[in-house]
Length: 377
Image 1 (cartoon, one colour):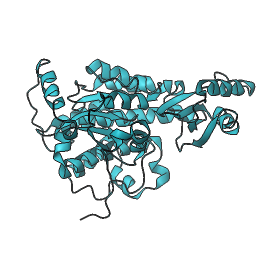
Image 2 (image 1 turned 135 degrees about the vertical axis):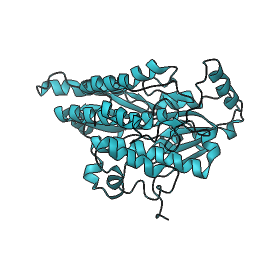
Image 3 (image 1 turned 60 degrees about the vertical axis):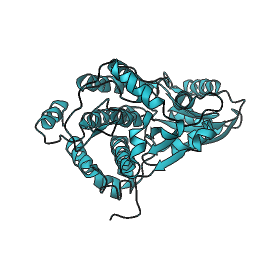
Image 4 (image 1 turned 180 degrees about the horizontal axis):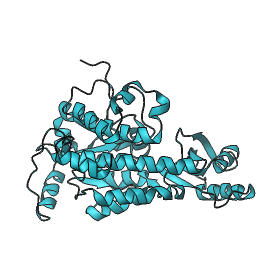
């Protein structure tokens, strides 16, 4: 489906679902197409300050996971919540295949493909928001900040009202296809690294690049792709570079290494061919100022206006995900001040694990909202 066809379908109400802001939620719901009057710039900060004045224990932060958290069976039992069924109906129209069946039944080798797992994580994470709204509506109503890891940032922006669901999903589709194409062009991957206080990650990457040059690889890539937590990094680049790092992990002061089940070196310069396709689609869809604070992967700072969102989302593809820095931005507190309730909405508990390593006090108020229930009612 082209973007123009998507817009025309949405205007014709064929996929007009997750497009409007409901009264109690801070994201576009599937069931309501009546928009609230646009707030003036003067009104919005007032609303945000009012939410911020609540005691820390009464406000919430939502974290949206990224690629790699997917699993066969996610989405099971969620169709009974809110408009989740409609979300998957819209997804089938936008994507051109049955995403719900893929999530529920696999096969796993198809679900893990970049072109499939990014939309799958995006949709099921927002389905988890519907579940949270059903079970604890105050967590949605009193949300003051959101962040998403890599593709999870799109879900956070939909939640915040900055994007419509269908248009954001189309952007995710374009993003995933472009990243898959860039991955297929170069044998590359990602390596999870647990280091030690004395580990020099940049020096290790330099050594790996020099090794690649000795093998005749031109313009080798090896760089930090994710800053996860203290001494926790993901390094990405040419497979030969990652192989060098694993074989020399002891000399490089790595405590543990593990290849990630992904097809390419995401968040490095090897993704440069994917930037323009994503930039083009972001310029064609409607992007609004987020209604709750959403933090960018590029630098951890909150988005302030529409062009900032468009610029950073494209830049994110070739920039490291600064998740550790993002968590510091969200949870920075003066001594003695309490922490908000944190909800990880989506498959997996990886973001909770990183929060535990970055801020144990904030983690005490952490809850995972799963995307699979024991059985359907």
